[in-house]
Amino acid sequence: AMRDSGRVMRWADLDGPVLDKHSTGGVGDSVSLILGPWLAACGGYVPMISGPGLGHTGGTLDKLQAIPGYDPFPATERLARVVADVGVAIIGQTDELAPADRRFYGVRDVTATVECLPLIVASILSKKLAAGLDALVMDVKVGSGSVMGTLARAEALARAIARVATDAGMPTHALLTDMDQVLARSAGNALEVAECIAILRGDTDGGRLLEVTRELAIEMLLLGRLADDRDDAAAHLEQALISGQVAERFARMVAALGGPADLLDHPEHHLPISALRYEVYPADSGIVQRIDVHEVGLAVVELGGGRRCAGAAIDRAVGLSEIAAVGESVGKQRPLATIHAADQASADQAAVRLRRAFIIGPEAIKAPGLVRKRILLDRA
Image (cartoon, rainbow, N blue to C red; front, side):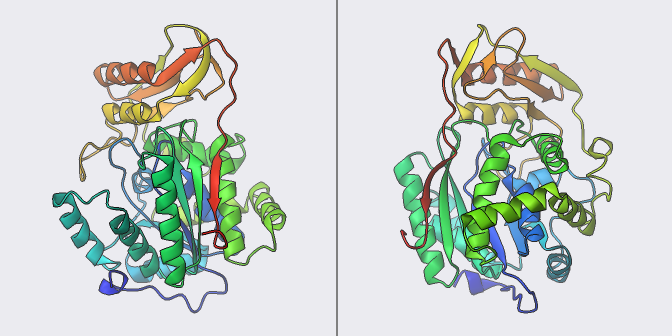
């Protein structure tokens, strides 16, 4: 009923599967910016509906709005044209798709049911079903930077979504992925866009961000029957990435939705830059043992790069870069992170949170694995 409260997209004329993923949110989670073009380069079509950030988590919509001219709210006809021509369009939710969800959310907000699991499932799937997807992959975050709290709660959500979506005719897999450290090396809207561009151009190996994106993409290619098995999917993805096809799809999507045609070649000419850069060093040298990712996300909020309440304005230039990871050495020669701030006062506030977020010790430690659990159709 929530799906049918507005327009339901139809993609009968496309020659490949219509795919998407949904993340429960985290810090440094810019997966969508790489995943959408990657799937398009492998024969999928991705009408990805994203949202703004709230609290300590960032939102894909905010990252895209750091790109000058990018229109995240195109008319439905333009969305359909971009998806057909480019293979991917990442946009925000419009009034045409599942408008009942907004009404329900308003009721949940005043009835203490924001955390009600069945209503969360309905909210997520109403939008995905309205987008006319053939298949969906859920990325449910687990750890200190997640919003689900416990592993048990995260798994319950993942299983509920996989079952309800599949019963509604949209086959769905779910991955429980680690958010006990920042997923990317940066956190903050323009900074994350710049990092994704560097990955697409091959300027950096992509680390954990590219690894989790690849795992999600493999599941999506399998669900969309674009690969025979995991090895075949991985090979298709690697070829698309190293050939530059993924970067080309990203550039075409940005241009088709009003952004600069040369963003991929010259991001420094277009993305906003903060007034102040400030390196934050630990009190003592050692090895990063643990990170309170929730605190790292709140450091971005202190800088003005995130919201304390829905609808608040944000500064898309600020954030953190070169964030140290679990198992890495930090000290006088290696900061915890570099702060990008509008002023010294906000930088100082963010620095307090950062130092509180990192636990430093002498022991060598291995970073946690990325995929905690897979919930597939035959196990759901």
